[in-house]
Image (cartoon, rainbow, N blue to C red; front, side, top):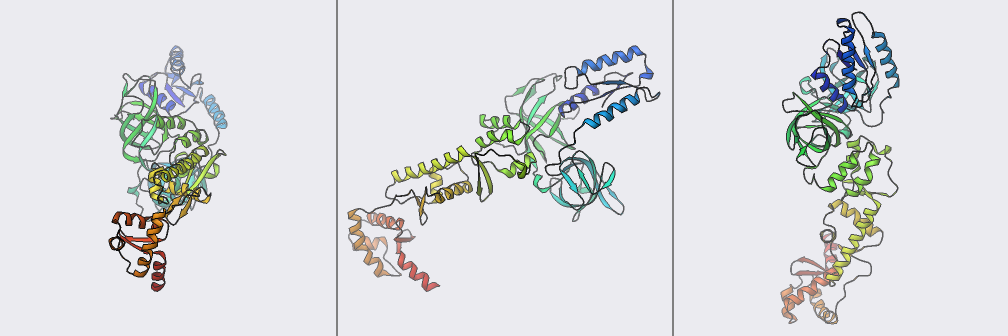
Length: 500
């Protein structure tokens, strides 16, 4: 409801409030042209024309205008009927997703304790629910609630809600306007937020990269700086990707509307929508990152997923997207070709094509290892990761390797990994030398000879002897205890039986 007084006409704050309404994504309005009893009809018509001209270029063009007077009652009933009609057309917010409420007030009630009030942004809450309060994530329990100023057992998105909460050592002074009361799945304080930023068209100068700003989101009011991601300046009326770097943590989800004011909070600069509440500090201007942000401009998770999956080198963490989109996993509609992989850090999602490409890279890397080092049975797990896929996080690589082992594409011999059919063979000369040294190792039993002793006894170069013993260790016939000391496998088994 846009209110304009007929005697004052359009004021600077009217234009600013209208700009904020548009930044918040409000697309329907009624205009109340008040105090018509104080002016001549010509003045009413003049102000009406001014309002129509002001709205003409925006989403609220052709909004109904109701001239009225609270003193005489003229036009009041017509406005009331129009408001009632619009209220009946407004769709109820979806109750899907986790509960979150922006706290605007907190006070103490005798006999009940602490009460917080605010607007429920999403989900639903019931008496007895456990929630987290503020950036610290203090656990609280809902003891009672009012929805739309009436006692209730439940409340949901879109309603004004008062919650009577209790928590261990919870004090009124610990609760501030701007805190969020939300379910644990959504708790993710952040100081970096990527946004789709629009600079208001009536700004007098270009917006400059790294300008100090005042952020308003929900009931939060935080200072910080705005980094432009597509250049050093932005012209009035234009939009661009940008990153907010804040002086204090906030809670922000994909699609949240925000308003930015200047450093002194005297003038509205612009605003926009949150794209990513867990924005990266590095590589934020790369083409790959900008492509992700372009995908995140979409309203739904499903529309953004193909691009996000394609850019996720280590897979997409579904829990992060559950939090950022406030979409529980049971409501996701994934493409059939998406592969879900279990890692030690939790599940990861890969585009099917990307996952199979990683398997091929793993096998190609192992094949290259065999070609370059034919005398080795194969690398161990960490060496293979460094050799074939160093860009993968270790838990993701282990999941990939486990899948290759389970599918028979890779075999293991002890800690050594190799392709099926690959084995280390001794040359004829190595077989002859092995036949000569083996009795010496067995004779030494629990104190076998060192490399230098074997080399001296058999009149061989130490390097040749050492390389052969290492080769036998890779074949599983020996175990290397220290650099130049090797035990036959059977001897170690005897020692183990004695120890047990």
